[in-house]
Image 1 (tube, one colour):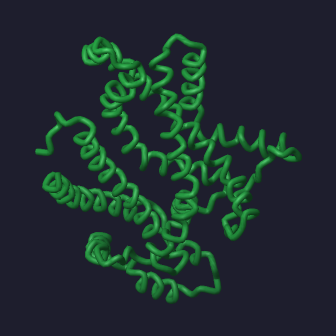
Image 2: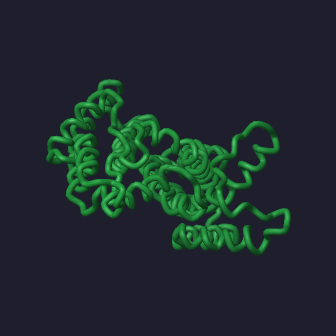
Image 3: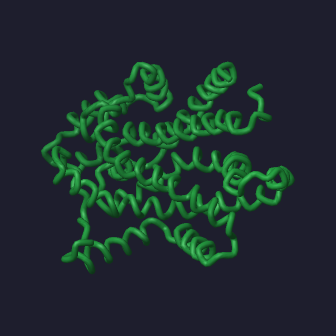
Length: 323
């Protein structure tokens, strides 16, 4: 397995280099000038703007700038933010905890909810609970996060504002958890963005788990297990679920970067000062080093999520060989 992991990692390196080249080229050739904010400022003379452009390396062709960025990348130098005047990696690191507090918890809850509900509704497909879950999961998939986020704001921050169920409309990024009271405030302000992302992710994941279980339950090995006299719980949990989780692993692994991308809109709605909000702000400012850093992080997530999924395949199904 370690040989397989090392070989796939070595393959991932040129893949990431190719992805970074395409991203850098697109960002460099896209319209927009980081110095545009100074162009209309009469207090900034043209020679000062040219000196700033030269100090930032913008006077060089983009292939030269890409090569310098690629050489410094393994050293932890991802460039400097044009707007914030600080290292890109430090800038992203300041925002990452806010995103993880929302995205990480929501994704964990989605998996925690989707797998048991999907298994239960597949084992009892013609019950009222199964039909209800199908309707709710379809609603979760169909509703985009900007719509469900707006609905949540209207319900919990406007209609229920003066009740115990009222929740803060804007996420306070300056809040520090120091005691029980601040911990409760953190939970209250994180509740809506977490629910919005969890509703969207759990909907598709529940339907996928249920569909995978329904395909495996009529299989011969399941009937054989029942014929041996094994209990229904053992048949479902030990035999059917293990084989059903193999395709689910793909969805869970690939869904990690997907939900980070979905958090971009959610962070805008609830004013969460995370990497999604940073990405939108950096695009508006033509702060290409920050945009490059965030998009490259998403690319790393996609590549290594696929690698993790392949490894878990072999752990779940011994028939799959690491060769």
